[in-house]
Image (cartoon, rainbow, N blue to C red; front, top):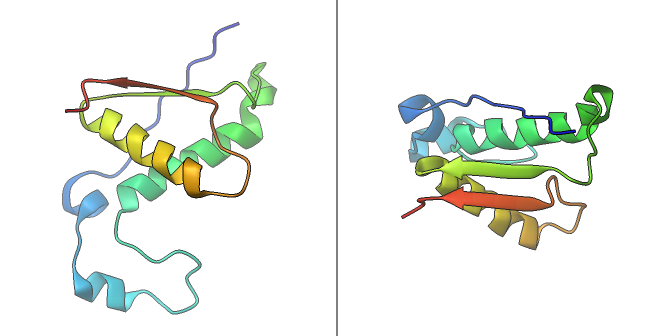
Length: 100
């Protein structure tokens, strides 16, 4: 079976606004500090998919992410993060379309 999950994430200033004030306003107790909330939304969606895809008949070890244009750049960033992360990856394959 082929199961497609489409996600949404914050854009513009709400998703990718960066300023030293926003970073400073985060508490020191935040596990992850940063202002790329759009990327964080995407990662949380990938975590949700990994935990729940079996309930829809999917295989958590065969998740493929795909993005076009800016979405391809996001996928590339998640690929780079997966290379650095010591935990099990949230996806197994990636398709990047026009990420120039």
